[in-house]
Image (cartoon, rainbow, N blue to C red):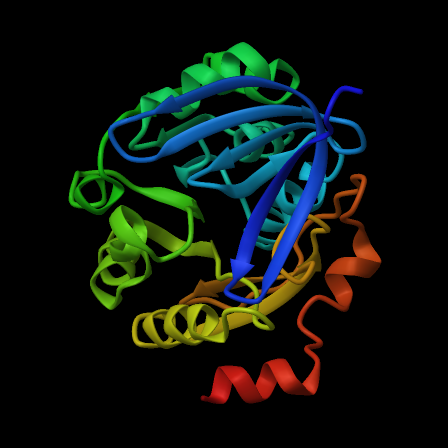
Length: 270
């Protein structure tokens, strides 16, 4: 009898989440991280970086829509967008649902892009849009470059290793300097249930640089605890300027977006 193959993510020292896989399609140790792509029974294809779920074909829309659309719906006229990370193309796909003029995508690991284009074509095809310009470099250095953006979306990995600087006060200050008037930045900030320090750190850094800082949550089944957090920040009022209806996002979701569970409020307070 052929043995079953499973891929499991160690979410903390006491907790694993695993999926049964059909085949291991791709693996590579890049300059920055280990990249794996699996075909699974229930979740479809899975992208994992350093042993952690980044996306699955079945639930990726939950994350991609929720890191993208609240900011895009809140900006009066989002024409120029900067994506930090996002080498799988999912956030770019969602941004391109709007009449944007340009999308700059800064992904430090070009191997993530090439693997996604080869094995996650339905998601990564957005990267071939003529409005998308890709920069393979450190985003912490990129934000020193001249440029002006309406929306910055920080779709980074967790604040460990080379991504740690993207959760720093200095990074948020640099990002503020390249945002236009009414500009909005949004970042993923981890699972408040499993890694409360991540949302605390991001909230503190954004609060030091922006007058309006609004955390919110979504459900992503394959992420640690299934509860994921994001923080949107601006030096202008954050309110809905346009509606969007996707597979997850709609008007009702937006209107309840900033209603947080009490335990999350307590975590943010520190």
